[in-house]
Image 1: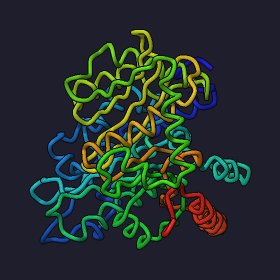
Image 2: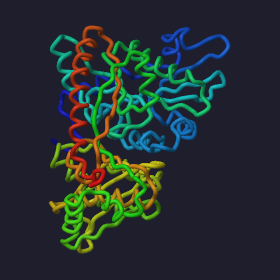
Image 3: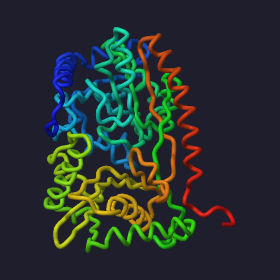
Image 4: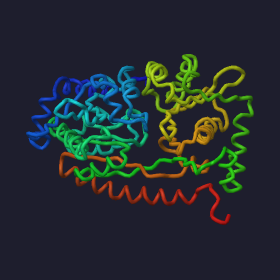
Length: 423
């Protein structure tokens, strides 16, 4: 498949979704659909739908999003849209919600998209879509609250610190009202955190359990101090991997802030495309996206580049939060033994220790991360299903899946590489 191309059926679905949503979701229409539940005579609450995040001032959005998690900041989400990576043509039609008081001041926002497919989400519901289709229903378009192409747990109901306690309830009610008004099959919230998940559960959402692998900083002084916490066999294995990764004469550069230059992004983007082509044949992000974040949020980017004989051969793209570094994308030219582990896992750990960060979140998949110190942790997504019969079927599936995933997390934890008490 050509890069950034969609199968014909997906293009048709995206076009249909775009046409259906064009101009249909005005603030007045949504407010009328919500009725008195969202307004009273003393303190009217306005929930509006925005077809682009650029319609909401960056300062107003970020006052709600905070500075903890960069994947929900205005600059990152706007780069997804402005670059053409997350727009209607690619199946991501922005439908962001904003909540304002009677003075028009934003109290809360929600990153929200009408989706004509389920790609780029990392919470897989293709089976649900197929089941509903075979039953004579229509799954797409659906609504999704997430950070595009980014399997990072974070806030989804973004509320200003001084917002009233009911702000989250109003935002959830607005999301449901929008889903109902458009007669959509479902509303999904991927990688939700508490207390957002609590608000969704209270509104009747189904909860899905997932799994990732995160590294936690136990106050290590340096990487050697971290290695000392591992059992002898794993400690020896990590040292060997790091030694062999650099054996072909490879040097590592860790770049952030003003050190990031267009030539670094040019090289990394070629790695990204090469790896995307090898794995799934289509890249979600384009060069313009990386240019925008490199220009507008370089201090929140950590680019780890591997160089051999003066030429870059591999790289790992990370985002930097207040207390966490988030692993995002990896790419390389050719195969280099253990270099992926060095750039994506060990260099991220070193960066976290050096800068006093609490966690490294290494993204989706990967039980192989356990022996390198990344332990299994639960993740959560929330789902609202319009059809009662379909909801019951999904609820039964999720119950069985939660039990299986919980057992898997417990089982994988037994393979922890850390020294046991008294060991």
